[in-house]
Length: 418
Image (tube, rainbow, N blue to C red):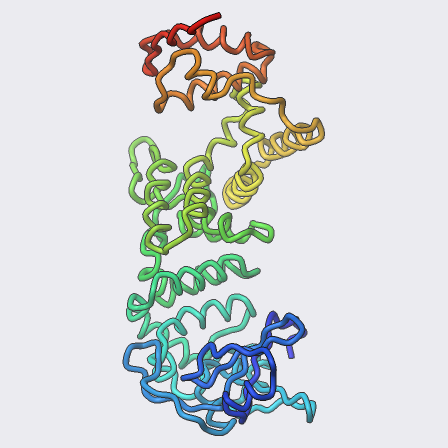
């Protein structure tokens, strides 16, 4: 009805699960107790559910029982009117028992029936309402919005994984900034991401941030992203999350070390949301390093080259660009960095490392935290032409990292024989 391509097709039918399995040779009883069968046809899967009504929801997520019913009863148990439309492919018509067509026309999100009852059945619907409104750029009907504000504290009882998925989908929607503001105005943000809600009202130095407080800046930065991945969108939402904790006001407003503090907070937030380990690491790194693009012009050429060859530099550049556009608007560093990166890409892959961790061990250095520093320094020297071979690399390491400098060097064992 909106001209959007559906990502999947769900089928409802009067046929009972046993009839569905008789009709199709390839089926899986994925939810037979709820009347749901997965049908596989030509490599595609379809969820086929028997018309049903549900008993009361005592845990805010699942009904106490399910029993078969007719189509009208099946539809009227759904969450929002625009999600309660059924298409009859035989008659080529849309069946609307809940006023969904009118709400589509008005671009309005409304619960099917009493809002408190629908949200009480599944508290995740509180977040889903904001996410749907954000994705579709719909308004939320007044009584539905009032119920969200009233019931917002109950979202804390929903699993972290379900909350995470809704938040990430909202953050990559076209109107993501409005979605975050709606989360804040409904009280949901203070429950699911209190660290982000705490940015509201935190002042910033007007000479650098004429746009206003940290929350306003963050929403603007989100909106300036172009088709972000969930990782980049979440990192942008959290890039200044350390500012409230580091705010000082003396000669002017400052946030000493906010990137490092924010990275620590981001790690805790990602763990709380049960983010995958790799995604957590990526988001934390972006938050920790989001100011480093601004240092590129002061870096030694070799260090700048190595930085611009980081695997995540595209995300760092996008975050820096959005950060600038949401504040002072000066994109000169971004433009220089983007051009330098493009030149590096055109030049082909970087040369092979002249010095590796195995080389350090062979030279007699004990593995430890300083290995990363030694390898990075050698990479910079190689990029600047000081090291051109493995032999020169070994000599350079021995000259610049003598024994006792934090990565202890022991004499390698003598070779046996010749």
